Image (cartoon, one colour):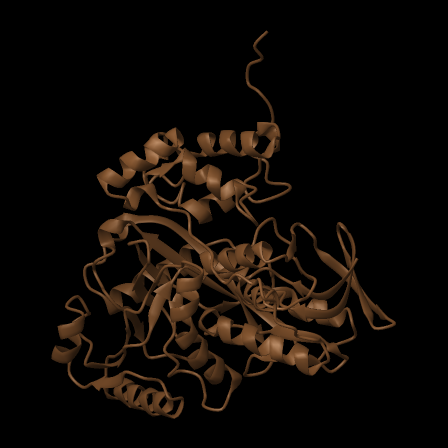
Length: 481
């Protein structure tokens, strides 16, 4: 088969681009190195929908940030995503910081960001956030900022794309690309895929993928960011996203509630050499803790339930790279999508489809395209009456697998059976929150392994944490005869 368009990478950019392409009468595939959507930068970032005051006016970052922020209203409804427009504060701690606040305000106005205002006293700041550090002297308030779930956006878009006919190829690493007679031959670890057009949304590896067609016009540098996630007992300390004035390496340590009621603090920003190193360090986590406590008083670090790191794809230039490759106009690069990439993603996907159309791909709208995707109903959020009704319809709702997050067998089973469904423990965790509570999977992992084994029709020894090579079991400890 020859596809009309192949998207390399199933992060938020790749998955949303495939979803946009599935609106048209096209044969589409997503080629993903990992064992699930959102296995790269999309699974570990700050989950912030930025307002758009930070990017330099006139850049792609500014354009896509503001447009993407507006699109989140509709896309969250269509894909049944958690999205809360809670606003953000950029805190200043001295007069130099207030000068930066005023600069950001002017930049935001030029970017046409709605709902910006300068709070010129600590009293005005504390009217919004009482737990802000006493040293804060003012802030920029951005009412249009929000929070979402980045990995749910990626797999929800992938689900919707697959439901509309897109093929998802997992654990398929791209190892070479050729071009002959108007067709790309994309060599993967699972065979060769042929396509008339290619979208390179390979994240940290997008420069390596571009180089396979002779395009060495940009370079990607990994930048590690370490985070701490705190228990839900800390989730009400702030009701907005809290930043301090930014530096040349980014927006710095932030404090934010999550859509699930936890508190997130971080990230650090350290350029790295290893594009797969997600380890955390004592020094990095100490920097996170100290930075967060400078912003918000009363954070109880004894309530940290996990720490993790993410890697951002920093481009060699100052802006996003979203354009046809200079080596081949049928090959679209979507690279260097660092912050505010999550916010910008819906707008980037729109733009990429337009670029493909401009490069000759015929875009004939489908009459049967369905933009909607329904999220898995959470038993923990149902009323007592709704819970009883769920159990009446399916007894598996009466079996709690994850006690911390109150996740049932029925929810886990649905997560596996869905289009682009879960195939490993981490994929179940991201879709249902089973394993995300205080015990971090200590109780529920055996139950999840058993359900995956049953639903996928594989021995429990073949069930993995995150794909091939991460098997959890080596064999039975006791044979019964």
